[in-house]
Image (tube, rainbow, N blue to C red; front, side, top):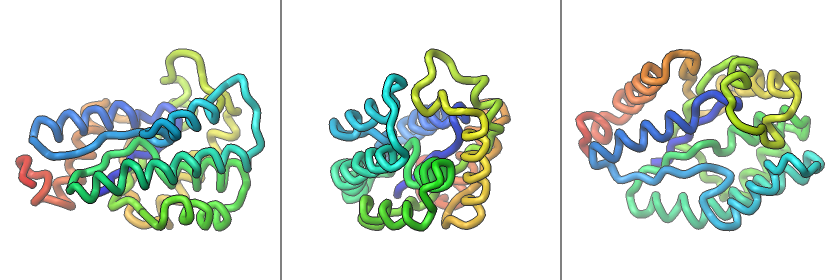
Length: 207
């Protein structure tokens, strides 16, 4: 099973991923918790380049770096874990690319979708949970020095947030979760969705 957390910068994806992973571990549910781009040496290298605040690049370059990392991620990390029967819990996947590069960067959703399909070999998540949060609120939550994408204009981040909202209506298996609630409330909403959809796998830790 392939599960993905999505959302604007500061929406709480990483925190919720860590809480879900801890909960699954406590229940003895085999899983792999990963971030994207990343998860492989090549992917981490691409991540360092694409988020480097001292670099500038064209939207096309940005897109291809993400997709190169994803191609490695799918073949070296995700598919092997799925074949072992593990749940893969990822911080970001293709919906980010559709929102940020396809719509936010204006590269065109259909072109990006086609290139993404080549990179992933057609692998799509079983469920994507979109943590819905105002982009301005998300920015106010960020700590430390902003990376290249976090430093983009508020107009860009609002465009991405609107893109996510639109994509949630059209992409398969996307569920909105209110991201402006307390952390534990968001966690319970996520867990409730998992138990409701797959009670044999998540309820009472049964697998």
